[in-house]
Length: 426
Image 1 (cartoon, rainbow, N blue to C red):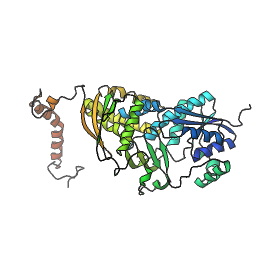
Image 2: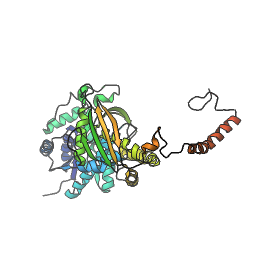
Image 3: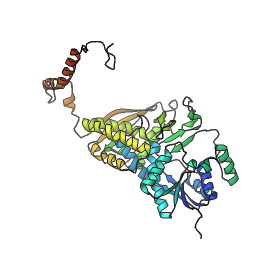
Image 4: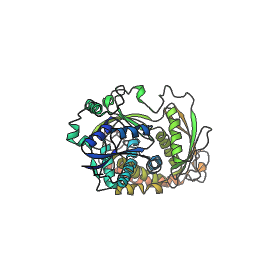
């Protein structure tokens, strides 16, 4: 068999309109195309996608089950670090990209592919995340990004042009006029953006939300569960009177199911994309929301104050930024994540929660770590604490504050004068 004129391409395939048209276009351009899908927990008919890719003209189709790798190598470290972007986004899309990219490069290596390709738009974050991951894993790989090629985006300036091309090539297209937005789904979350959501003042229709029950329809009776952590990792979950779960994937699936039922995990935000554009996104992150609440709570009981402060200032913020910006396969990511195990050594214990109408409520926690001393903290007994010691503590702490007050007094800026919240005299 003679080699393809342009080379062999492994395409990140979704089964949707864009990547199906890209697949056909790459073949038209002279490439031999293999299609790749990653199973990262999305609700997807992979067999239907396989048949569609092959019918469009893909020479081979690959689907890799990456759920366990996704949970243990990406999701769990993010939970340990309490990762969050701009104080609201739990990074569901960002977390999956390194796993998918690693799966793609592995297949591309085995199959002797000259190129990898994707269907990411030229304005979004994912093009950056995928391509930086590709280059970090295989520096000499060549990437085809059709939505950044003038010969592609000038030919297909809008959805109607893609639909016409699909009809010309006999590509079956699912009609989505009733749902004018795009989605990305994995085990961690689902995102919604574009279309009618580009107006940040447009309220999402009720039927957009795929995963979680609306608050109006969520059960009127709370449901209780417990999560046991070891070294900051969830190792056992008990929901109501069900059997305990210990497998990482099973834990995440079970937490997703119970959170979805109670309407937990919806957000609607405007975020700052890495490339500098603001973007409106709606997200559902059911299990992730529960784990974040529980993990932060058990840290309050078990983690040293200064270790927690350093972790929050350094690991939490930096790892979230690294994940969001697509810098996973970098030396700085290795450096930052190396601090996670040390920060989580004492994060051992169990948190009890209840779910009710979108809320995750902590109702108790316990641990054998010993940092919390009930007797020492009690207001009803001394518990080994000597109150007179506090006098010296306050005296030492007040030295610099007294000096600051004295300096202000000499300048005629005595602190007793009315001041606004920024310290300016009123």
